[in-house]
Image (cartoon, rainbow, N blue to C red; front, side):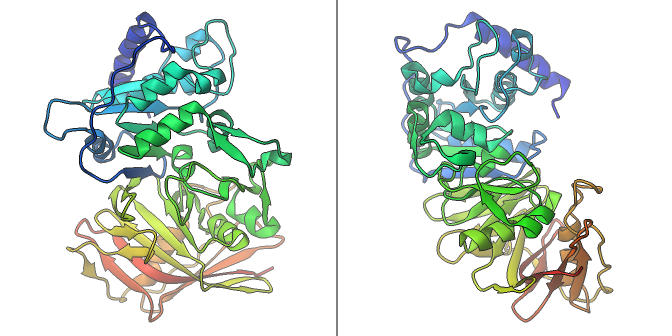
Length: 437
């Protein structure tokens, strides 16, 4: 959503950018301010930012080079995951959804929080004369210097494979199942900023931050029916993944966006099992994990929650899997990646005792695109289970032939708590998936 006030601000940014000279190898970018004595961070946003003030402020604060001093955060806005603008009018209209327009929109948004910005003029194509967003800019020395002068990077949403196509150079592979990639100069500059500042992203801009076996698309039902295929697939519902992976800013986990919002628990568990990754980090819409990239310690902020799926002790069966462990952290709770992966409850949280009625069965537990979609069905079932005296819950996929069931169980390993804001979080809830017909 893009409110009219920000749209007007973005239009003003558009005019300023049109009057400003383009970055080039001969133009001198501003020097990068000295970094604060703090570890590099990531702000990982699950999708649908909704201009959430807490999330935006956390990015700007972490990018501020001198805290309360006179220097300002400078955010490099990377929007190459969006499609290339079709014409100059669309490129200059921040209400549109294309790489150039999104650059204007996010520039105005971060400027409204006191940051300077640099809209990185890189996308996947040139569709009209005078198009300033081009794939070639990933190799332009002036563009790289402007990026390097920043104190933080923000990746917008779209399709994470467009980031791969524009910011990596990869050896050809069938279905773009790349295994051999190297950085463009622009990507090298992004890494330099990330090493001393903050890297952040939403939706596709979240997913691109993992390492090997990055998901490229798919839905939970098709994932369990057909399995995973390396590459970028024509069928958007088929589970695909990129063996080389994303940018690798966050290691040790697969990453998925819009997570419990769109019932992606199933597809993420399947990909983890097939690729041999023990853990998945999944983040909901309008929610972020603010992560210290050195210590691996993070905290959840925003409206919903972040999940850790642990498949390290899961057992494959003839018709599914048993023993996946699911933890769900909400605002104020902490997340650990690296050693001791898991979630820890907020200090002011209260233990939740299972006293409620039995959890009601669900008929579209993976939020199918053919159903209501985007309604947190499995997450809500899990919350009923951890508060239920029966301690178990059950749901099936909307699709049949075959149909899949997800069973959730609160056992002796499970803990649950209520945060001060009244949200229910939990750890080590058991999840089993099986074929039922």
